[in-house]
Image (cartoon, rainbow, N blue to C red; front, side, top):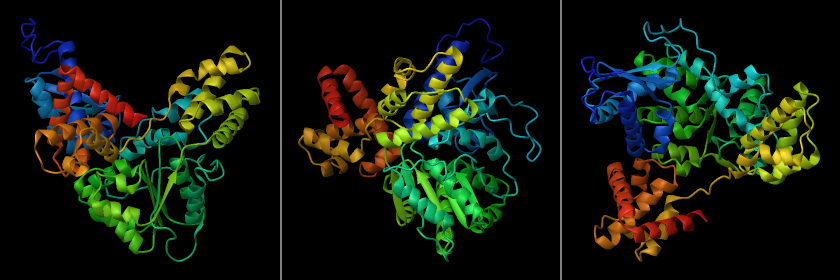
Amino acid sequence: MQLDGSRTDGADNGRNGNGAGDVQAAWTRVKRRLRAELGEDVFASWFARLELEDVVNGVARLTVPTRFLKSWIESHYVDRVLNTFKSEVEDVVRLDVSVRGAASPPRPVAGVAKPAAPAGPLARYQASGAPAPTHGAVANAVSEAAAGARADASSSGDMSSAPLDARLTFASFVVGRSNALAHAAGERVSRHDGEGALYNPLYVHAGVGLGKTHLLHGIGHAAREAGRRVIYLTADRFMYGFVNALKTQNALAFKERLRAIDLLILDDVQFIQGKSIQAEFGHTLNALIDAGKQVVVASDRPPTELEALDERVRSRLAGGLVVEIGTLDETLRASILQARLTAVRVTHPTFEVAPAVAAYVAKAITANGRDLEGAVNRLLAHATLTGAPVTVETAEAAIRDLVKNREPKRIKIEDIQKLVASRYNVSRSDILSERRTAAVVKPRQIAMYLSKVLTLRSLPEIGRRFGGRDHTTVLHAVRKIEKLIGDDPVLGDEVELLKRMLQD
């Protein structure tokens, strides 16, 4: 691989070196800079699966797994990626983004190319013959399986619903103390046949693998059975549909399609990006709610913590019924595990797990339902591959890494600000103020650094939480504290102590 076909002697081994290793190292630096500049949320959504294939004659060939990601990056981030790449490798003058596994030229024609079979977890379940998940552990599989349909969204601006998983119904949803209120609200909303909406919007938030996607699919199934017009969308499908409608000058058809339904279900609202898209989402919310149509929204955090969303949208989301699905207690974990084992025995009748083993697994795995899924699949693999009975000892070995996968404590930026202010004898209002004295600047920068390290908030979000500062100010603070920690062991110990106090 070469950056320039005229260079074959390897003379330039510096910043613009022509070796594959040099280019890949430069690409690693590019991704690291994008992560720092855009924040963890944006990077994970759009760039985590962006890979460099090669660089030839000044063209950097990048690949992504879906056409949706390709379209989104080309529409919103191609200039930023190119400029960042050029700062590392001057020879790069153009980017070419393609879909992995798809032929580059000729490019797919809308309405002709068929979506490739999903390569995600759902496809792996189907290919292996293993039973598919029954609790909320299929969110990633559903998202990946819908990628093909997302790429084939009609160019006419018509917004079609993502598919609802037939297994994710109210009948298969295991109810416990932590999710009973959310389940009851979801059932009432889906079966409500009176005039107007019942709780509007119904906003469900929960951590990873706690069943919120299962609940949304259950609501969608029940509402359709009642004869209601339902559209279920993930945030990325909503964004793709809107961007595609603008490109094809069919925004009106997009708006009319969404406003002609009875129930809108939107998953992962925290990923909605861009001012124009957020504005359209806000208009859609207002139109549906004002018309008495039902809206159900899910996220990984409450509306007040969606700093990336427009304040008016956050206020509208918070104006309905906000319900949290809490962590799974041991009783609920045992029930979910038993339901999963029962489902597995439909296709593997000889698979048996003793009550003592099931009790151990339910007690040991505390993070989420997906880890319980993983545990069952591992026990099944042990039983089918070795033919040996499943014992507590084999279960301990099989799920050892899952037991270590404890859900980390969620740390709030406000808590960081309060602790740092107390530690350095300043007030939280001083940290948020415009004061630039040394006694205030240092704790402010430490608090910004800890906010970047200990939370998933992006640099712009952190800046807003520190008195409306720009993301470049936060980035400067993070880099300065990183350097000071490396140069000053005493400061390094101070920061580590603050980390431990926040994490305990």
